[in-house]
Length: 187
Figure (cartoon, rainbow, N blue to C red):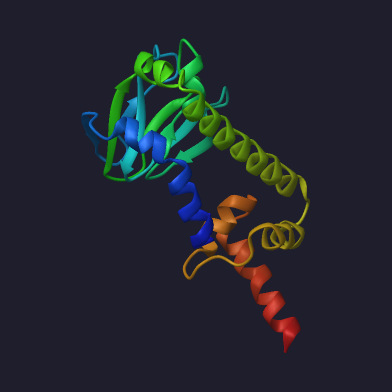
């Protein structure tokens, strides 16, 4: 998310998670280290204090599919709260600190109606964002994808164009060519 006001709002909305994990023990991970593997039983839940955890699934052909990237202030693999096993691998993208709580503790905390409502609201926002991204990814050209992205999010902060390329599913080079075409068309 590139909008600072929206980022601030997300941090406010994630306060219940930060409060729950405030006194939780930490686990440090090196870049590339595995937090959990697909089909591991879910006994613990993780909240990112610093760094990032990418959720990946290995495909039958050996390729990898990146499902989600959880950064600071995010619950990792939140859908696993309601699953017996993880459905993907959780891999540290950088030096990462996660807070660790037993799954049962989080499930118990959700018995608080206010926390449950906030968690549901967060999940609904995530579903809306995912649906928007799916619609953008269905567009055929880098031009159409970039137009849709800019309509949804506006231009990124300085240095954020590589993230835009990833978000719209094109290579950074394809995005830079499209941006160059737009600059040339303005002159």
